[in-house]
Length: 388
Image (cartoon, rainbow, N blue to C red; front, side, top):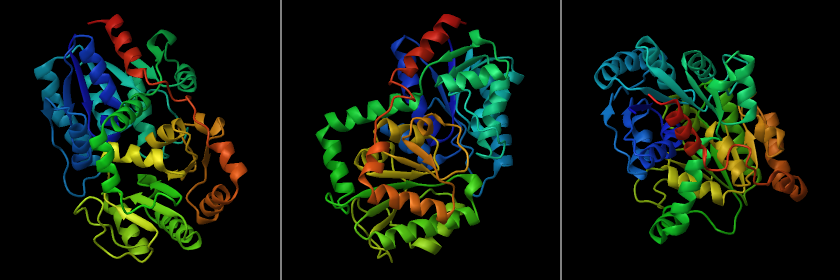
């Protein structure tokens, strides 16, 4: 069976790792096509897990917009589909690469498998453009791999036949388990992590922050930065670590409001003086480093989708800086909260978790609502049963 795996961003790559491994374990050689929608951050993941693309469309360009990404993926993937003629095209999640590759496969009458299908907010502009990318991919797809029962119910409400849906768990948890095992079983990696983050005190509470959503660009992002500044100033005993996304719409307000980004340089060495000594603005991290910090964190503040799954699995309370989420399972389980992007909502919730041990303990419970680490095996089993 010829399976073409198409992805273009770091989150997609992370969630494809276990699927690629599971396909290989069953004797299949998946054909890996990257669009490189995010060049540098994608390459980090591929290098970490020793995955070499068979095809690289290399579409990334400076200041690219959604029109550029969509049209360039469509143009590039057309020739790939003609050359490879796969039995299945596998896509993941909600990136623009996912939408465009699915549309191209539909045009070519090739069956589409959608990993992480069925997530919904009900608002086509939040997250933007991911909500609509995911909905459109559902229309094109032939096999829907829903991570949770809630996602399955969303698909059934949209009249997707039940025998086209498989509840598998989320492959992000597969990748998380694999990475934790790497860290725990490799002394070289552990020592490298200690050196890389030697600027952090082991006896001080650490908050991990990620923020990069397109719908938060502008005043909402400025408010997020002002919130972090207030937390750092008020709680000088707390260390805040924020790996800053490469997008200029993220970096400009971060640098203007919070200080300069720490230069990459030598791992673990701070090369610039920042105005807030307990707020560490660092370059984007490879996935192993991010998981290391997740395990070490006291609390996570994020607008990311994947981290909403990973952090609760490790028992880390999550404050989600969005108004709606397509991942409500952790919120229903009481281990995550929606706090929006306003300083008046973010800051009090952070202070509550820092100052109230009972409240913190209530949220700091590991959960398996997003999977048990075996999602990829279920996906590949379903594909093999569906056959060519």
